[in-house]
Figure 1 (spheres, rainbow, N blue to C red):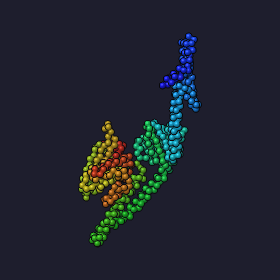
Figure 2: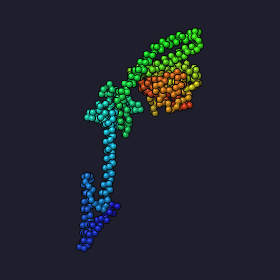
Figure 3: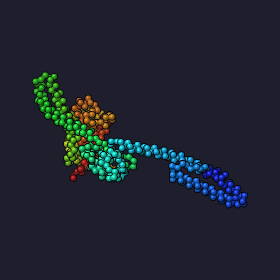
Figure 4: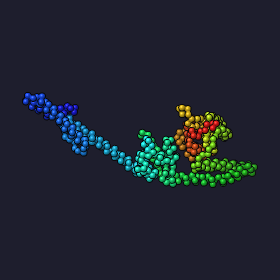
Length: 438
């Protein structure tokens, strides 16, 4: 189309006149050559104008007719559309930059090599980043806190990490990492000092109240036990029953106080767990025997299955407490005459190498609705408040289990559905397993 238009312009303006002139002088070949040369010079002139326009886009579009005019018109419209698109993109990038700068949270972009690429002003204030010193540095060389390095390299970003500020340790920061693009990551750091202090106040309050309640409850239970022994002989039946009920409620308060103190210790005690190697089979068997004694009125059957080869490395009291809580819940809440199975299996990769261990407590009871599962590890959360109170539960068992697993670098998973029973799994990492015989 371009050459057709250009030929329609060159024929009447260049080729025809030069051809007529050459024919009249009996030099038609020379006339044709001159016409072609003139046409070529015209094309070169138009090409030079287009080139100069590209070099200086702020200049107006050069005038041209024929194919060159149509092409320049299209190029001009395309350039205007591209300019508008580029302006919109630049405005969007500018707004994103202004938004990031306006945020009080630190935002740090990390490239695929783990190097610091860019950050906002809050990152300079919260993390102490400096453009000249830190740009292009590996993030783990700048933020070299041991727990942050492990959090960054493990790439398990479902839960945030809370650590003291590298600038001022009196401030607490929450780190959240989001992968994006081509193995790039976005680090968002929030100042959670106020929330951390409020949480610490709550923990201290619960610990102090629980500790102060322990002594009067012990005294109260001691007197109630003494009264209960002689109540049937001395007191009327109605009052004797009251003494028994008071004893039951005092025991329930004692269990609640003990669980609160246990949970408070797990939350506040940051010391490394004691080094102790536990025989998994013996540990599970002891808990199973306790569960059998607890389930006498329920008629449950408790079984166990242990895969040999490894022992567990951790705090025996905490691990036993976690398993006992799971078995106690299964006994109390699975129904009547159920089967409760305790199993220990090794988790292996595709090549058969041991990657960790899983301790499971499963039952074939009534099951739990899916909507309750995310909240089961919350303090005092109850699926059925009436049944939980009747069975004597404190509502803290799974919260204790969760914190025990966090202290052992593991985690708790829950699978259940109505009518399909429930399965609670304790996942231990590889470094918590010790081969037998070592």
